[in-house]
Image 1 (cartoon, rainbow, N blue to C red):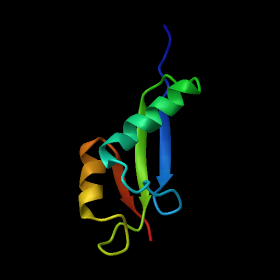
Image 2: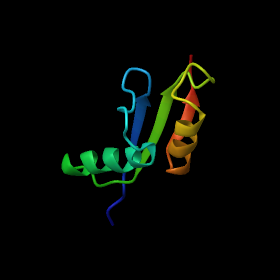
Image 3: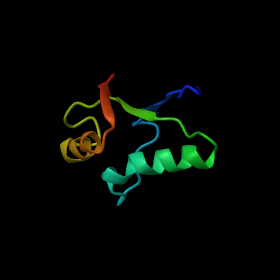
Length: 77
């Protein structure tokens, strides 16, 4: 029986920010799509890492959309 592996993506949201005008709800799907095109077919867990404090990070609305799309948020200053 084949075992599924898990793929973990740690995304530094400061050094690789969401492009202006891009819908944050689509980030996870784009990452998963890029991984599949590269041959990864296992389940993916995505964690955005960065300074998530108000006024420092991408903003509450963006964080809410990322979280609601299944991306975990991890504050690290």
